[in-house]
Length: 150
Image 1 (cartoon, helix red, strand yellow):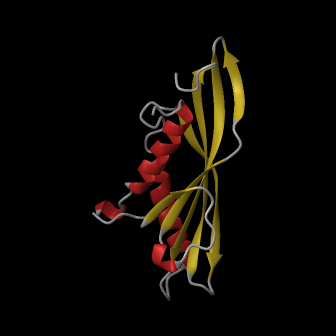
Image 2 (image 1 turned 180 degrees about the vertical axis):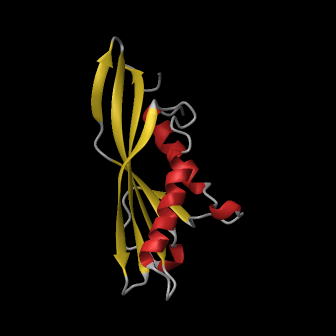
């Protein structure tokens, strides 16, 4: 079954996150990468990331093509060892996510561009966990009556 341009782009982001290896090592940054909002992930699944799609907007119509803006929210969470600064670890994970996802601004020519529009830390010192959100915006184009064709 063929995927729409939108689905192909979301899958490319998931694949990019799954392949992130920090510090040129062989170990993956995330144990799990899931789709959709995640609540109450247990420590044994950490570090994890999830990819959620936001509300899409039509930016403009050019003849028979439509340009769309799609927010992508990447949630990530990880355990923090005792004595380690939570914000330092947040910045470590955030930087690897940014590099892994934004290094190809067209997602292998699937989208017009992908940019970061924000990020937010979520720190829980009592539970020794941290994480946050990386918020992206995809701009892509498809035929007006065919979301499978650029």
